[in-house]
Length: 329
Image (tube, rainbow, N blue to C red; front, side, top):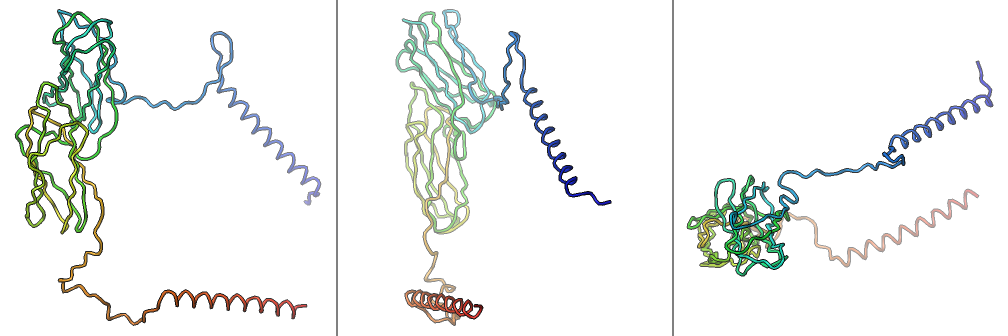
C-alpha cells in the first residue's frame, strides 16, 4: 500500500510534536519534584549539594573552652591524628585580666611522651599560642594541658589538621643511630632534606644535632655532617650529594637531643643529571661510529636544498594547473 507524501509528512510532524510535548512535560514534573512546601506555606527550591562529610582525624578535632581552677589544674583531651599531617594545638586565656603559665604534653598511641610546649612568659588574655606537631604514627593521642600557677580562669583550646607532610617520616629516639636506605641513579645531583617536624618545649635544650655519613654501593663512606644543628621546627637542613654510580646508598646518622623523642621528615630530591656518562677509559666507549655510511651534510646546505626543491615543486604545480585548465576549455 502506497502512502501519499503529504500523509507521510503529517505523520512525521505528529510524531515529532508528540515527543516534544512528552519531553517538556517530563521536565516540568522534574522541576516540581525539586520543590517542597515549608511550614509557613511558602515554596522553596531544594538545591542539590554535594557535602563532604568530615572523616576521622580531619578538620577541627577539638574546639572548646575549659575551666582551670585550684581543684583542677590539668585538662586531658583525646584526639585522633592521621599519619603524614601537621596539626596545630592552639590555646588562649579568654577571661579578661587573667594569666598563667601552661605546659602541654603529648602522648602518642605507642606511649611515647613529647613535651611540646611550656610558656616562656605568662599566657595573657585573648592571645593564642599555636604549637605545630607533625604526625608519624596514626592513632589516638592524648594531650595534657597543665596550669602551672595562676587564678581560676578559662582557656580556649583548639586542635585542627593543617598541611600534609612530604618525605619519609621517622621517630628519632635519643642516643639511637638511624640507618636510611636510598636507591640513587648514577651521575646525578641530589638534594637531601632533613626536617624536624615535632616541637621541643621551651624549658629544654632546643638544639638537635646530627653526625651524618653516606655510604655508596662500593662501601665508600662520605662524612657529611659533624654536630650539625637543627634548631627550628619545619626549617630543614639540606645538603647536595652527587653520585658516581647507581645502586643502594646508606645514610647513617646519630643525633644528640635533650628530648627523648623527635619526629623527623627525610626527603630526597633529584636536582639534575650530569650529561653523557661517557667514560673515556672504558673500552666500550668510541668517539666515532665507523659503521656510519652517510656523509656529513652541513645544516645550511641541507635547509637551502630543501627550500629550492620546494620552490621548484610549487612552480611546477602552478604551470600544470594552468595547462590543465587551458586544455579543458
